[in-house]
Image (cartoon, rainbow, N blue to C red; front, side):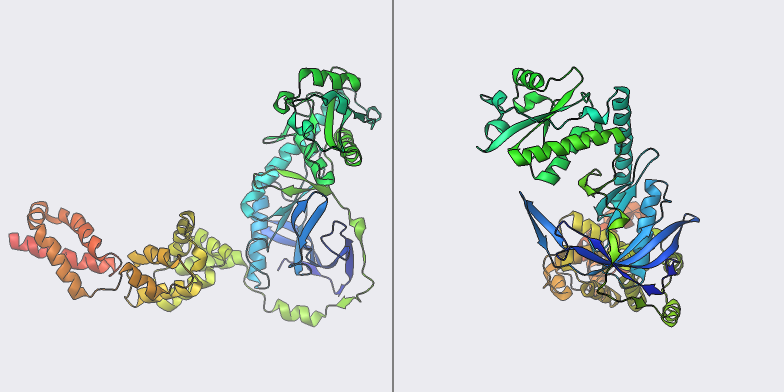
Length: 530
């Protein structure tokens, strides 16, 4: 379905994973297709490779130097689709990711739900480097993540140029760390004052870095903050304090700042960073700071970063290369027979974007509605209700998409409303037992508990249907009380009277029937007046 060349002999490869997420130390991967493409915007975006691989364990928390994993998804087969570097902007990136998801779902061979389809974005700009952003679970995050990574790379290139203009060279950096604990012997800085007995305050010079650590590289994030995040990931320490910050917020005095600068022999445009921790971990932290500061001379560093919900990202690990792939000698090659490929080719599902147009025309609804039904997995439910119960497609699609979303925003537990219950609601409507005007109230009631049936909801709401005979009696009562008003207002009396009648019968009988009966009765009153 990705128009790829299918490899006829699959070889299992191993990919090293040394972070603990794969207990055996490697992940098994098979390349199954190459040189494919996805049609998009009248053109094509290439698909470089399609792989099958096994999932890793899921990290759930970190406590100092200990990482905890869940192994419930360890070994689950994944399909990995890697696009060629041909996507030009964040909007196209979103469309491609969405189209890949639609295509995968159309096969009926993949799991659904949050986390089952995950996007890793690879972003680079001219003068920058490829940076991988992992763990993008929601499509609407994609444009902002891409935009903010572009901003980040532009800012890092600017920092590089400023350092080069200042004449900074790699040989200017030193790992000559200074223990400055004595400077803070009587400090008011709580972070330093409350450190453990075995912890020291270690400082390092960052040559000609003044003003660059505070430079914003992503919205609300400075270069110094990015370095601090890398320190936290690698060492588990809480981060760094640097000289570009407003040191008074830490209660570090001007005198303490001056003493550190003197101990490090700093010039006017030099900066410094300090860390707090035991001697070994503090040294490792400052080594990370120096390496990252030295890396700023190259501009953008190739690395893997974790997606954040606000559209920014943070350091995860150095970017691995293809060299970590090697053959798995425990598994023989797998031959893919041509007959098998041919048989599968004959029963491929319809492309979602083709089906989208066809279904929009068939049911006389907007293509956007069809697209949303497909994306949410509700297309089959929609078609089943419309075909079986002959309900107006617009009512069904509005209920499944807009009404359900509205209930979620209002705090209702829509997970309690199963597809079977939704079908029952529309079945009752088709049988005349429920008026469509009562739909939202019934769904609200069903959302209260998974054990509530549609019949229970009707009883609770007092929405047992009424007959046309009973409706006529109710309308007669309402019109009797307003006869003078009707005679004075003529046909304009219909809307106010309709409102009064609906207050008494809403949800118990179809509004069209109410309007029909009401018009006839108002007409009779006006005929009598004439």
